[in-house]
Each structure stands twice: as structure tokens, then as C-alpha cells.
Length: 286
Image 1 (cartoon, one colour):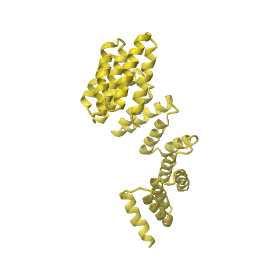
Image 2 (cartoon, rainbow, N blue to C red; image 1 turned 120 degrees about the vertical axis):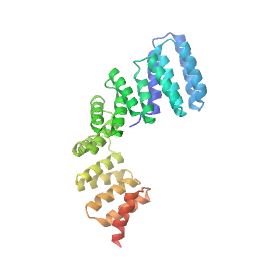
Image 3 (cartoon, rainbow, N blue to C red; image 1 turned 90 degrees about the vertical axis):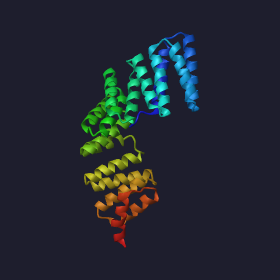
């Protein structure tokens, strides 16, 4: 799971709102007015004006955390324009200004990932987790980096911590199930999906993911039930039909597998494996 634009902006606004309670009314009005102006410019695609206003705020604001928030937004707008080096500089200024603001490290770390500088990203995430070892977004971000570089055990550790501290974080739990699958811990992965599906009963993707793992475990009857649940919820889910076909092939039910493959194609799924299975499965039916 990535750190979303929505999370960044909402977090900034929440922190700013909290800090402003400690300022006098005139300061609140001045800061809020200028900050809102910059946001409006950015929402309309005028990042240059938005950045100019935020730079002005850094010169008139006295609270160092609020100044750091300005630099974070400047960096975010620069990143949105693919000005990566400038954005790194802005996030670094945010860190220099208020070293205890976790968001600055997360923002810079996520950009380092985008720039394929994973070592630098991991250093930023490590600092952020020293400040708050339970931070949900940092744990998720670092687990993704670990997963991408093949450090599955480290990714698993972060995701288990995330699941411990934030048990309602469905995205973190699903990511943990995916890591378990890659590690071959299939029963643990299925258990996670079983637990999530107790409440997320209408998520076709979860049923499909569960079906794939059950298929790998050769629990084919349960796999077929799970993928059929996915299709029932989302009848135009091409990949689910492809998964169903793979299960049916393992069950030696080639006629129905061929029908499922045709449905997968009908609903937009494609790929080399599907082409191969069409030839090896459907052509043998004629």
C-alpha cells in the first residue's frame, strides 16, 4: 500500500488545526487565510502561486512545526510537478526546522522510493519510527520497501507490528497475507483472509486472493467456493474467471475451465498464461 495524497493533506490540516489552538485569534486567521489560499491555487493546478504563498508563510510564522508543514506542502507540490530534487530540499528543510515531525521523514522517504533510492528511504523511515515506533503509515511504507527489495522477513515484522498496533488497518493486514503467501506460510495467509471476510463480506478481491492460496494448497473444493463468491459479488471480474479456470483445470474439469477462460476474455482479462491455457485446454475440447 502507497502513502496517498489524501493522507498527506488531511494530516497537514489536522496538525495545523491542533497547533492553531495555541495561537491567538489574529495569528490563526492570518495563517488559515494564507494556507487556504495556497491550497486553492494548488487545487486549480497553479502550484507556483501556491508555493509563493507558502514561502511567505515561512517568513512570517513563528511556530517551527507550522513552518515545517509549509515546507512539506511545498515539497508535495514540487513532487507533483516532477521536481524531485527541489522536493527533497523542501522536505529536508522541514526536517531541519522541526526534527520531530514524522510526516517530513515519511514524505521524503516516499520520494526517495520513487527515485529508486531505497537505502535513503529506509533511513528516513527508521528515524520516523524512532520518534513513534507505532506509526501506521511509516510501518506500511517501510514494509513495502522491504518487500520490493526481497527482504520478506523484515516486511513481515513491520506488518505484524502494524497489525498489532492498528488491528483495524485492513490494508496492512492484507499486505501481511500477501507476504505470508510469498514466504509459503499459506495457512497463515488464509487465516487472515478468513478473519477479514467476517466483516468485509462484499469484497470480491479478497475472495479471489483467498481462492488462489487455497488452490496452491490443493484445497480445490474450498478454492472453487471462494472464487465463485468473488464472481457472485463482481460478475464482470475477468481475473476471477481466470482463477476459476485454473482451479477447474487442476480438478480435471476442462470443459467448465474452457468456459471460464472465455468469460475471462469476455470481461477484459488477458495475458500469456491465459493464451497458453486457451490453447492447451480449449483446443483439446474440439
